[in-house]
Image (cartoon, rainbow, N blue to C red):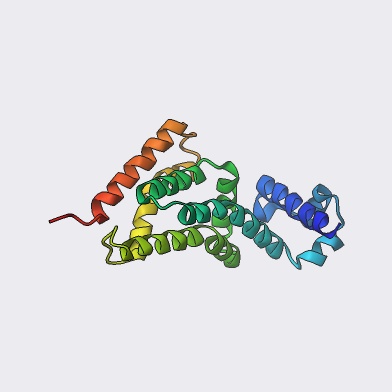
Length: 200
């Protein structure tokens, strides 16, 4: 019962935040949408900010589990990097992720803790996973890196630089699966051209 109510609160809050934005969402509407009382919401989350932060953390945890799986389950470096690039590109095609991202950007100057929570659980977390993966590859001799953190940032930008902004601003439509796969392949090729040690 407790789990179902908690889930209902998070699901109801998510639906209202996505429809109204953070500023436009009211706890009354969230309670109605979730089918619970406001007292129930406040029993789990002491403020609207705390509720939205919980939604951010839950959604990002689901999304980042894919990235965690990729860097831990595959021994072939090129295949792993292709999977990572494809997953990063798919973030730009995920309307729910984009909605969450837009809300956090809109509220960053008024509610910096919200933006910080999103960064820590989402983009920052993914960057850290990729950085540690690249560092392991450098230690094995597969890559030649001066700075794993910089290499991770470059890999991410090669994967979806420009595309993320276009999608956030709704100036670009959905890419096809073939287009996304080609973009991932090109990103990996460019990255490896920079960082794979040259013989001789």
